Image 1 (cartoon, rainbow, N blue to C red):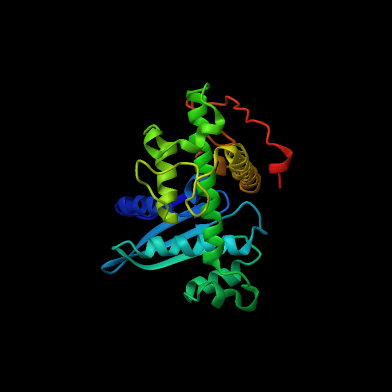
Image 2 (cartoon, rainbow, N blue to C red):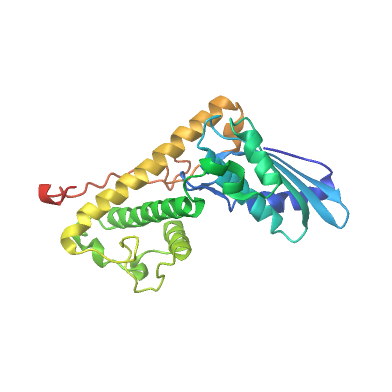
Length: 272
């Protein structure tokens, strides 16, 4: 990412970049800053308020337009909400719908106003779907970490684990953030392994629920790995701006634990 302009704007530029860290790729469940999607950021003087211009880039020109719009519009929202910003311009570069998306953002037209009849699916419904997947993956990370720490714990009993049983670490913090967004309980006695409605599982259903959660987590991590590679190929040098999630498919620090935790075989009658 390129940050330019007068040195006296350094603080504001860093604040803007930090704010962009709150924008996630909905499918990959990672901040656009960690993925290297922020191409450039400029803060200029504009009277009593500052003018901010951001350029975003994606791994391919054909990345899903609704995902692209979500990230770009979320980026504009977080920057506009900063108390010192005036005009905020977010530009999506090198995408087959760049012109349409950028015009929609400039006009604050919203998703349907931007894509018209092509906007068949409501973005909030899409956002909720991926927030649920992110929660499922975070839940699996916590429970798998618990199994690594306590290898004698029966998988079938994971349905009894409550939030207070989890260690205070980044896995738990990530899980709590995702529960809050979805409105799921975060009380110490709340069950960890729950469905989308916050309901727990019978002991016999726990292995299948955990397998499904693991599939979701692996899918997210695999897609993130793939997209990071595509971005590096498309934009040489962007690898220096990518921050890897330690427990993701591209681990980056010594705390990453690759211990494989096998799960019990699910009876045939429970498979769907």
